[in-house]
Length: 250
Image 1: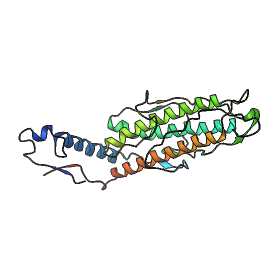
Image 2: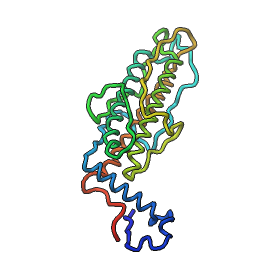
Image 3: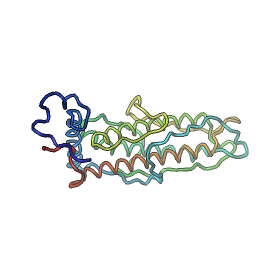
Image 4: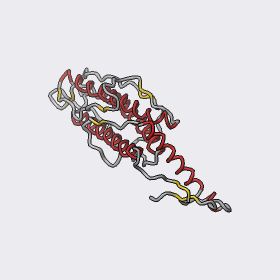
């Protein structure tokens, strides 16, 4: 889109003051704000992500499939408790990495910060590998459905907070917000919660199906990759010499 050219006579009369067209006051003020935000990000050198998530970026964020029924994993079909908890720790670590990178920009732009007091960041701006599948298990070592779902719901809430924080930055620099499907919206808080550990089954049928665990983990990794790709596309606009201004004198 070509820049809005603001002429000295732009606001002679009230037409362009109240108009919602591309030459109206609101569009011009918004364009100036975007230009200012992009310059702020460019000068500060806000970082891109190194995405090692193993997820596949898509056009938008997909709804996370929260399992809705337990199975009897006495003989087979369940997900291993220890392995699933290791996967959940990786989700917590990813949340911390994304939080820290988002906050590099949000602090400069005067936006609300995301908060994560949990997880470990091995390298700044580097999203670690995520598990896209669980480990098969049966019997007493299979994970309980109820505890896994509780953990998944907290992880999903954390992702919602990350999407909201990232979108605030993306929109501020004139990039499109991440498209979302499913129950993503305004989060109750931008503070990421600690993901509770899942526990093993104590009686059957009360296990989480391996297929359900796999679906959740894969969708989560893909959403992380989608967020990282959108961030990269937006932040590249801020690189010196790239990206046209939105508003210029005409």
